[in-house]
Length: 91
Image (cartoon, rainbow, N blue to C red; front, side, top):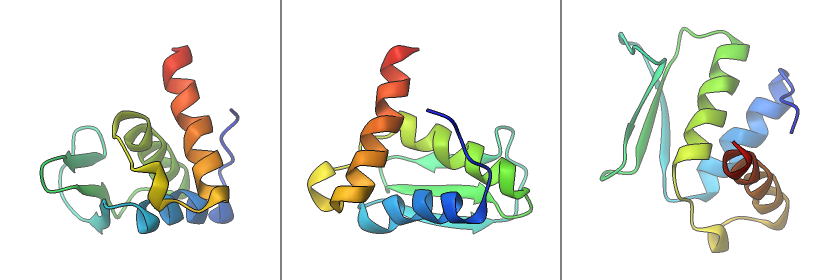
C-alpha cells in the first residue's frame, strides 16, 4: 500500500479512529517515536507539532499495531484498515 501524504488521506486515517473505540488526541510533548499509545485506556496521542507527513506516518504505525473492532467500521474504513493490517502481516 502506498501512503499518500495529503490532508484527505490524513482525514481517512482519523476517521478510522473516530469509528473505533480508540480515542485519538493531538497533544504537545516529547515523544521519542512521535506518538504514545495507552492500550488499556484505548488512547493514542500524537505530537500536534508534527508535519502532515509525520502525523500520517504515526497514525499508520499505530493502526498497524493496535486491534480495532472491524464491526464498528464503515465498509470504506474497514477496507482501508484491512489493507493497513495486511501490510503488517507482509512485513
